[in-house]
Every structure is written in C-alpha cells, then in structure tokens.
Length: 378
Image 1 (spheres, rainbow, N blue to C red):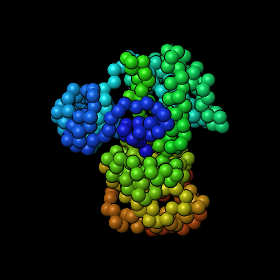
Image 2: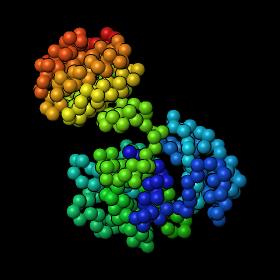
Image 3: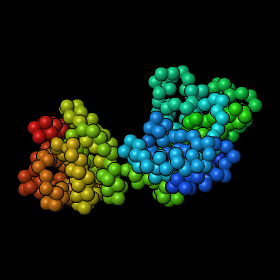
Image 4: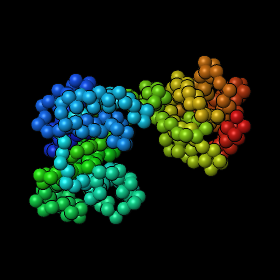
C-alpha cells in the first residue's frame, strides 16, 4: 500500500526529519488560504500515486495566494496517468543548493533492511542504478542493533555531505530507519533530501510503501489508503480476502498458495503462454471465495483461458470444484477452463468438473500446455 507524499512527510516529521512548511488542500480556495500564511512563494504539488507529476504539469510554483488558487484549480482538474487529482500539497518553496537520495528498502537477499544513499538525488533511483550504479551506496542494517550512527556518518562522508551537516544527516537517516521499522514498510525514501542555500537539510519529497501483510497492526495507516489507485478487480480481491495482481497476459491463474502460484506462472511461460494475473485464494478456500476469484479473473477482457491449479491440503478439492461450477452458472462465458486438482477430495472434485464438461489435467505441465493451447485457439 502506497502513501501519498503529504502522508509520508507527516510521518517523517514525527521522527525528527525536517520537512517544508505546508499543508494539503482539497480545493483551490483552501490552497489560497494556505499560501496566504506563507511569507515565501509556494509550490503546488498534485497528490497522485504515480511518477512523472512534474512532467505532466502537476507541480508548479505560485508567487502569490491568487496565483496559488489559480494553479491549484488547474491541477485539481487534472487526470495524471489515469488517476484523478483530488488533493494538492502546498509547500513553501525551498532554495535548493543540492539534491540527495536517501532510502531504506527490504533487501531479501541479505534478509535485512538496507539503507541506500546517493549524491544523484532528484531523479528516480532506478534511473541512477541503470546509468550510474557507482553513485548508489548501501549499508546493510542489523535487525537487532538497528542503524548505527557510524553507519550514517560513513554514508554522509561517502556522498560528500559537508562536515557541519553530518550530525543533521545522521539524525535524518536514523529517523528514516525508525519510521521504516515502526510502520512495517517495504520502502521509505526521501527523494530529494535537499541541502538548502541556507545550509540546512530538508526532506523536499517523501514516499512510503507499506507491507499489506502488516496492516492489521496499523489500522490508522490502513485508513490512509487511496482507493483511486486500485482497479475495480483489486478492490474486489481485497474485499474477498484474495491476493491478486493483474498482469498483461492472456491466461488467467487461480491457485492456492503463493509459491504454487509463482510456479504455475513459470510453467505457463515455459510452454509459451503469458499469465494474466497472480491470484492466490489461500488455504482452506471455500466455494464462495473460489467463485469471487473466478469473477475477478473473468472481468479481465484479455483473458483467453483460465488455469486452475489446486493442491488440496487444507483446501478441499470438491469445495473448489463446486465454487468453479457455481460461479460459471452465474457468469456466462465462453472462455475455456483447464483444471488440475490433487490432494484432499481431489477425486470428488474431478468428478464434479467432469460432469460439468470441463477440461481436466493430471499434472501442472499437462494443465499448462492445455491452457496455452486453449488461449491460442480462442
């Protein structure tokens, strides 16, 4: 779950990270009121969860409150990469002398959090990694001891922070790590972390991505979710308790278990197909959940065939089969279905599916091949 810039920066401020003076507005008049309390020009920034706001015209400077109102009115009427702009952040303008990148991510290979810093801030870190990888410095953080001051100082010196600002940089780096841990984030970054013309460090922009699996511990953060970012199918999946990610292929996948789902997608690609989604119905899924998953898959117009790969451990094969059959009674479709069920009550499940005249398979390889062929013939 992604947080907006204004939400991320508000969290940063709680951890002692300096942010520009400003506030969020949902109307042009509100933007004018905020700007009227500023002694400097302000920057109006569209709050949408996509990159490229500036290039799309969603970030502009206003010299006066009247200009701020006019610009806010224009930005609030925008649609950036398919997302409507419902709020703008009105921040005081910062006089930038230098831009730095600072972020914390989960390094799964190292099995711990890693702090990254770069002297090439203000641009996407992926672009820096591609064109100037030597400019990204990394520090792996021990989960027991956390980020140590000496590690932050080493980063500061390595990216050329002036000595008088090293202590402030250390405070910001430590605060960023604490915010990352306390919110159960998978990413927390400041880009750019600005060195101002007055010789101060300030977080000009911020981004936090939360781990959805930990949101049950953060009901306050769950309330910050932007439903505009989610597609209708993603909303349905979340409501039904399903793990779903839409992809660009033509073969819909319904699997119980994340690892099995990944393996299923790999085998589909191995036999020349492209998965249309990742969808994990989880263990113990009942017929109603299977039906909801089928509705989500078939709502994608790109789906030309569906592959069900069910391992009946906790999940019962006959329950899944009934969910598929019941779902198809209500969802009229000509999309071919290929089903592979093994494990608990698998024989009963296969009997139910055979009675419904569905394509069955004994192995994943057979199922994938049949699904790929069905999709190509559709």
